[in-house]
Length: 275
Image 1: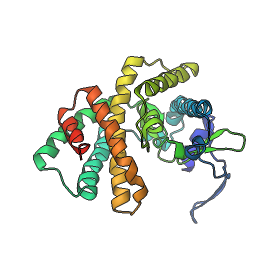
Image 2: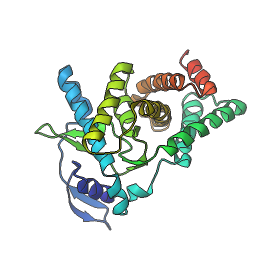
Image 3: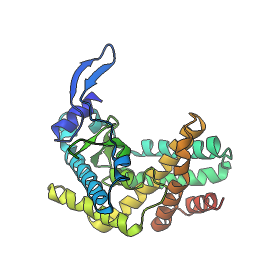
């Protein structure tokens, strides 16, 4: 946490200032950012103001990505961790185990599960190739605080690592929603991120290629979320995660259909959403 906080501060990112650390006692004293999280704040806003704050959050994603060279130059732990194939597949396996076995209590037959795993290998390999920028890793509206002056501050950033340009945007737009957003709106926000990157002088990303990257990342990130929500609700008793499970599956299915590369996964998700 301290390492990534220092990295984000060096990159000009708004995080809580650390005042004191006692490592032996496990104590950190840091700036109080208040108790207003963006997720709740958005519900009180008019549509134009809501869009402004979402765009401000997208601007922070671009600034996180702009700190990628710093992550490497400073030797930050965030620059040493990566969404490689092994990590991505671990998260997808977590989905298979905890959605079907733990939550649904209907484990997949071995032959079907093995075919799905083969498609997951293709998905993970494609995303590993695209892992090239610093990511927060859990960049959603519950991990952004709204200060008294209306500015946004980033929290829960200790798991930052190198991933795809699309990773944090997928998390911001699609994580923990009950109604999947309109495709046109998502496309507009993709272009917003690419424009913010351009404003910061970052590498140009082709919009068509980025849309494909976003689809692939949406499949992996949303299935990972389903696994987490299934585990949290079934094992840890946090039932408030349950309403997010089917919307995440719907988003995953739509992305799988658009990708047109994972027929067995498509059939499986479509079957789950028939129940």
